[in-house]
Length: 325
Image (cartoon, rainbow, N blue to C red; front, side, top):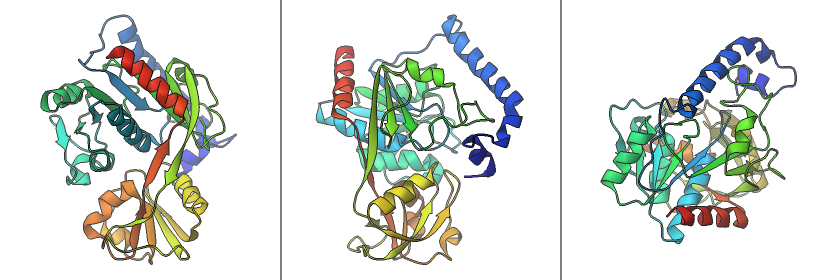
């Protein structure tokens, strides 16, 4: 976390000096919403139900694990989900169908992870409407999950799920760049479901509120599938995600000892040189592992996690979607 991000979560952080820029950001955001509210632009509806999973703040809240859990849930109840995503840091002239063996540098780390883990088709493109139309034209999916498209108002949605990181909340409550918010806290009340990652209770209102947690699995090697991580070893943690402190807490809660922590920026494009001087055993997130697979060494492991959602929230989601089908 850099100095600006740290200030967002301090009571009297210096980022308040950026408040004029936040006011400009808020004005532009409100203008974009007003264009659709006045009918000057019309949200586009796909021919299948659309579920949007997103957040109102920058940084990690668990969107990828929740998206994977939704795919699993929907498949278990007869749906054929497909996923649309922006493809962070990737330049695209047209929608692209992501294959499990595609390079993260060409498709983005999260889309490749989603394609590998979900077994569902994944399409990337900044324009979510075009991405969704391409997905439907090239696959047989009958429901679309939009990963991190909450502020993409051009796409009509049937269900909105907003995630909050309980350990950080909404910070100082200010919009970017003075605070961590893309939209104000008022936006939570408009969502169908608000889920708090790791909290005791979701702090703000939504039609349905609940908590979820990330259940860690058994660490897996990036090389040599039969290798196992010694549970008594002291680990070096590597992370290029939005909230690495949550990763560290998960690893410690699983009973592992930490010898060192090496944090990189979210979506960092790892190279072999970045990790060359870090001793083994080394443990990273699964999202980081997809970027390090090509130059992985013995003693490198990743920690898979599974999002565990409340049963009543899952039931609500299924019932809402059943009514749209």
